[in-house]
Image 1: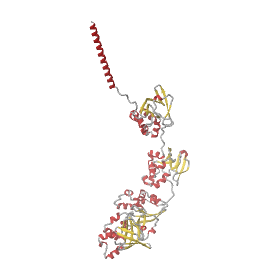
Image 2 (image 1 turned 45 degrees about the vertical axis):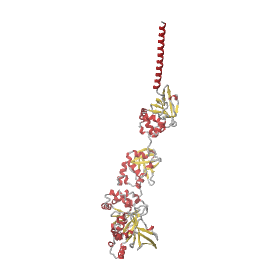
Image 3 (image 1 turned 30 degrees about the vertical axis):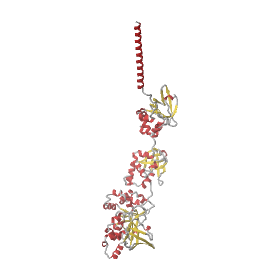
Image 4 (image 1 turned 180 degrees about the vertical axis):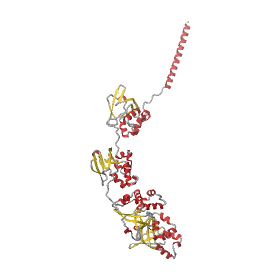
Length: 617
């Protein structure tokens, strides 16, 4: 029995040991499993900046758009720490509705003022807020009021709906209302005088006129002006009166004084405008003002239909008629052309080329050969490159063509009544490098006045006297000639023209630019034929003739003033030497010499000097 008890004890002890061993093993397994399954402790340091958190949160999309427009995003991407009270999209929507604007309508300056009022320097957690505290913001001089009631926090009148969103460079507290600085206002900026005109479609012609006269910057600055602004209807009435289609048809010299006549210095409201004389920016003309109660009349026939439109730089009064400054009675070339309907195409051409002011200049002393409408129509009909008046007015050569009809001195018909001679027009030569050459015009006054020789353009009415010169009416349009055309128009160069054509050099000489031609007369060629024992140009073979002609051509524009004694000139075929004695210029070649009998006949592409002998290379 003792043995049974002992055996029983031993069995029990073994069971205990076994259980203890199993328990320890199970504990070790659990411990091992626990070590494998537990996550590591999270890193508490935030990695996103304030700007990144705002960009990532969809409920801050309005705030993000505001920051972008105000160019403040970069401020919140750096290392400087800030506390931002961030309004939600709902808060922004309510603010915009209350203010009656859209986010797009707010200026950068306005948004900056609002947004900086939501930002405090440093990292300020909600636990640091105390009831009744004030915190200065980045909006200088503006502070926020803090209210704390238990866990509830208010900033001014906005509730903090989510506090302490930690970021890499500060903290964000979400709020349910946009905070508005005490001095913030959304009153629209007052536009300038030009802004008022630009915003009103009824002033579109006025704006076009200001642009053409280069007066936009004058009326868009800070200097205060009073502007009497004509409506589009007022300008249309002026166009009808002037017989033009629009502002484009009025040259700047005419337009500018008209516009300046509508502007007075300073800001004069309707109550400050008194009866009497009102000085304008057109120093040559003043406005006569009458006042009858609230009715203001200018120059007896122009009404102020709307007064006192305030501008940032003055005031605008709307008027129903364009004010035209009074002018002294004149009889300039421009006046004569404008008044005579036979010159309507010439007038359009002068306006298109901006030359009206040149012939209106009272100080000028000009001679104008004026084509009539019939002359222009005949010219257009005969010209393959110009098929209509519109083509003529749009021609890039229009200015040069018109200036070829003008002499810089006053020449009455009696002054022109002499043997053929050349005069200088105001039309410039077209080659580069020199700007002092003007194209010559051939005048023959032996039987009436005819122009450009074989072109046979006649003066049909002479001596229309003007304050600033004289007009001679002509029956066709003059075209500035090149060197070949100069020779073709002059009957004294028929042999030279025949020689150039036989040598097939006409195109070369006409297009060379610049060029100097020493041009032998018909008599010079006759002397050559006698010396050679031949009857005419056709008996000189083409290679020999080409060499002779090239000996008369220089590849530059040599005026008489460019020639000097003992000077060597290189032609296209050998050299010639210049000799000047007692004012007579002689060209000395290897086998001949010639005297220069006429100098400085200028063409569009070069110059001609007439010589009395043919130079032989």
